[in-house]
Image (tube, rainbow, N blue to C red):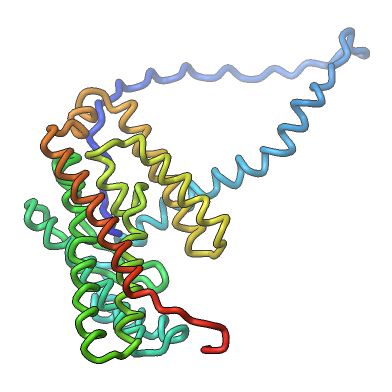
Length: 305
């Protein structure tokens, strides 16, 4: 999952708003002794709706306000020397070691590195400077870039490059497992396949959402519904945070597409050949990763713990 400073397509300039006239000073008046028309109480149905949805609206507004500083923090991380790529990798390995042990944690972080390097390589092929991956424990890694390309086709290529290289990295572990018979490599390969398959969910900011920019942007809402379903089925802070980010990014992207005018429409205009190529790669990756997960699935029982 990559990060960039300006992922929105260009939007049409909006005319400057007319300055509001100066406010007139308020004049205080003595109220009459009796109000001739007593105030009417609001309908009960409306008050109930306010009680039910008021906290949700306020909570959503707070989330949107907090995501702005969070995004700025993520973009500032690559500029901090203490949090270099190697340093953030070591921090991530240490964090994952608390769950899986250092050997599996190291293998998992290396699989993340291979995945992110796919994004970096494709970004530079598109002529876009990209930073080295920055790792964030329990959230994966990000790559900082000013854009994802000149149009949705380039964005799709950048998005799919991560799962392509990441899937190849996980597949290379299968011969090692077959040659050694060590279940460690089997489990690590399965995790790599699952990691790349999860990133193909058709919702931004995941890689599948980048592919949908060239295929069918309305699929963002299908992916958002799926990630919210996952958050309800398997509630944990990481999935919930991804769901919130997905909702925020989907709303911004769709708003920019609807209100951006001809320039935004041109960003999402791709040729038929480009769309077919994205569809073939996207579906091919899903099938290959599903087969890989089935082949490397390791049956475990509670007694094995």
